[in-house]
Each structure stands twice: as structure tokens, then as C-alpha cells.
Length: 293
Image (cartoon, rainbow, N blue to C red; front, side, top):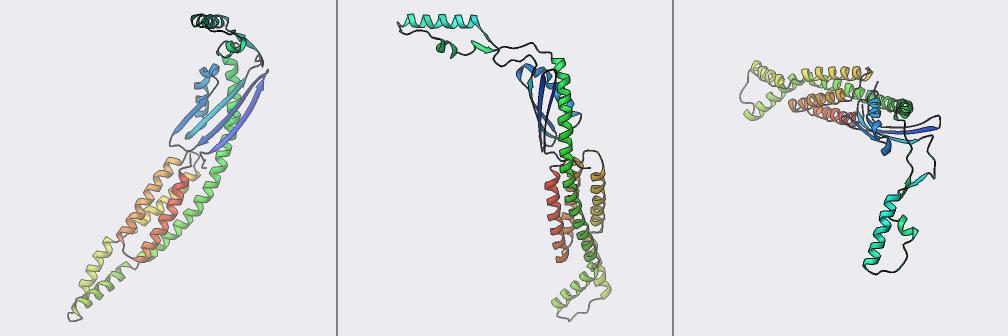
């Protein structure tokens, strides 16, 4: 079964007033590339999150964003940094006296300094939140994997259709290649007749021997057999439960090698046209394989 690497999932879990919102996005990547975004207070939990994600996903760039609201959080709970406020006020007074400035040092001027009034930080039980984060991750991961599988099934349908086209074209190449020996014999005879103007009679056995040598150098039977074997392997990998992206990528390269050899070995126009069609379908598969986990 194929899995795509592109998906999105969201979960929201709560317990005892704590709320965790988890958003996950995954994109194409050669390896597993994890990016976790947590509020600063919860950074110690980053490795825990990465470990949980790596247990389910094997490939792709995965971005995880967690929004956390604890039961003790209160909107409007702030604290004043009095030592900072006093130091800032004294600095302003010194500046006013030094340059004989006029005007009052007001509240607005103090607040604009920054860092004097800030949201109160409550003590956090990271272990308690870690367990809730695990639950949220499990739910989001389940949804993400399900979406990746749905996308993977669509890719599998497309691959099967294109593999059938490639299989049919290979059969056509195989049929066209069967007449190469007779074709080379006829071509050699015509060339010799044209060069000698029919004045020299060439031994038919000699023509057959030379044509056989040309046909042997142009023989693509091995390439066809290997390409057909790659087709079977491609289908086998798609049916397997293991991540398939890297293996399919390798097979695409092997297919391409066989097709290139077929095109370079034989000069028959019919086969050359079929090879172009084979490579066109292969390129469509290659583009899609980049999205397979």
C-alpha cells in the first residue's frame, strides 16, 4: 500500500481544563524532516514530540504546531517588574536633569519602555502536559496517516494504469524486434546492389552472416526481459506495507536505463517511436513517485 507525503491534520484534546491544539502538515522530502513549533515555556517537550511522530512516519517534511492553554491560565493575569520600572524612571529623570528638559514622566512613557508589565507565568507540570500532548499527537497522527493513505491509493490507481500502458508498449517492442534479422538481410542486399549496380553477385550465406552480426548487436531481448521484471517488482512493492518511495525511485532509474539502451541499440523507426512512448509514461510515473513515502 502506497502512502503519499502530503497531508494535513488537526486535533484538539482537553483534560482538567488543560487544552492542547495540534496541527500537522507534511510535504515531500527525501528523508524524515521534523519541525516542531512549541511555545517557549514548553520547549523541553520538543524531543518527546519528535519521537512520537517518528514512530509513525518515515519520510517527508513534517511540521507540527502545538497551541497549549493550561487550566491555571487567566486572561488578564499580569505582573509588574518593579526593579526594572524604578531603574527606567531614574534613567529618565537623570536624562531630564542633564539636559534641562521639561515635561512630566507619565505612565504611557513608562509602559512604552517594554518589559515592565508582562503576562504572569504559572508553574507548569510538563509531565502532566506531556501525557495530554501524547493524546493530541496520537489523534492528529491517525488523521494525517489516514489522509496520506487516501492520497496513496489515488497514486496507486494512476501507477497501475500507466504500468499497463508500459507493459503493452513493451509487448509491441518485442513483436517489432522479431523481424530485425530479416530486415537487416534485406537492407544489406539492397545496399550492395545499389553500390555494385547489380554487377556482382554476393553469396547469400555471407549476407545472412553479416546480417546476423548486425542483429546480434541490435538484440534488445535482455532489456525487454529486465523491463518486464521491473514491472513485476514495481507492482510487488506497491502491494507491500513498507514505505515504497525510495525503492520505486530506484526502479524508475532502472527502467530508464533499459529504455535508453533499447533506443540506442536498434535503428528501427517503429521501435524508436515505441521507446519514446515508454519514456513518456515513465516520466509521468517518476513525477508522481516523488510524492510517495
